[in-house]
Amino acid sequence: MLPHRTEFPTDFLFGTATSAYQIEGHAKGGAGRTHWDDFAATPGNVTGAANGAIACDHLDRWEADLDLVRDAGFDVYRFSTSWARVLPDGRGTPNVAGLDFYDRLVDGMLARGIKPAVTLYHWELPSPLADLGGWRNQDIAGWFADFTEVLMRRIGDRVWSAAPINEPWCVSWLSHFEGHHAPGLRDIRATARAMHHVLLTHGRAIEVMRGLGMSNLGAVCNMEYAAPIDDSADAHRAARVQDAIYNRFFISGLTKGVYPDTVLQGIEPHLPHGWQDDFATIRAPIDWIGVNYYTRKLYGPAEDPAAPWPATCEHKGPLPKTAIGWEVYPEGLSHFLDMVARDYTGDLPIYVTENGMAGVVEHTGDPTHDPDRAAYLADHMRVVKAAIAKGIPVKGYFTWSLLDNYEWALGYAPRFGLVHVDCETLTRTPKASYYAVRKALLRP
Ligand code: IFM
Image: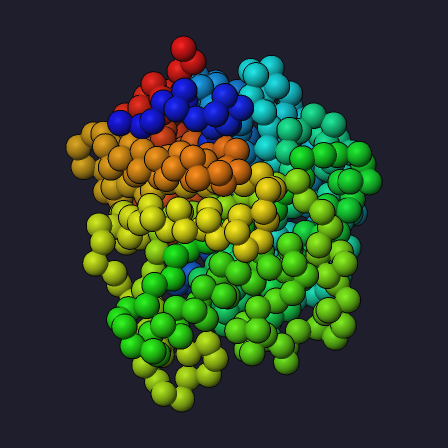
């Protein structure tokens, strides 16, 4: 059973999260082409070559979707805006229909008593900017600042919170080093530049939003517990390196203005000239930090003794797994809530901005019967409750995701939603976990 909201402090906020490209339906409403459209159109990148053209058709069904958020009892809806919907070429003339859509969406949340928590960028880079080098090009900080200004002049007066970029590790490492996400590169120099530029871009956007008088601005980092595959010194080293790349590099840059030595060892020769001077911008004060947490992975040394840095290798772990093979490990969330407050953010409010699990891939039987999801959420909520009891300033917990949606390179098979979406009819049907959440959030 999920812990009830009365077991948390009275000002603790519960929310649910989605992102633009994963639900809106990108083919409609005048949005421009994005690098995810290009990536998905390249054979072998995405299961079934699926893209976000239709997704959940949220663009036309947003009112009913916001009703679902309200009826579950959520306080906050964390959504994202598509850069290419607002500025189809990434720069220049705005798409009026796009701005109107986000304007209506924000008003729709307020009308339902839901706090709008906006993320400006959740991965759909406009293709014309990808043509110019995308995250490798330092100019992206200026392009993004302009996008921030256009969007926030329209909705910034009514959003409850704003964060520039979702999951800097995914934007840079997963997409430029591992090649699993758009633009699908496998290049250390591109990775180093993207890692730094994503933080510089964050800082510029914070400056723009402060300039517009906005408050409650934050940053959202994803974290994944890195454990050694065995007790060897090499496995411990591999886990430490992975931890530094994934879990420490971005938050350290944002809050301390330094990058961990373990990571500089590999990327320093590839960072742009004068990178140290950018920390004044990167460290623009924030009001909260968001942690997205799902799982842990095991690491050992690379099999090839000649492998260049980081020379690590990921292994399958023994714990129970979700439908996409991610181990269920709530202890990892406990570790990160401790680590973030202790090593980086002190008293700054922490929000768990994403947490959830992929359910059954094949729809045999009843797709709304998802007891594993309720158990997963309950276990992680208990971890949050324990962290609060220890004095860690966790102020909210948001589930990923409201709807079954486009799970990027894995297409539409993994189902993260509290609400089932039929891919053919787009009919929404709340799952058992939705009702379990609703019961837990019911006000006395
Ligand atoms: O679906 C993604 C989301 O876009 C970012 N965080 C992790 C989720 C599950 O993989």
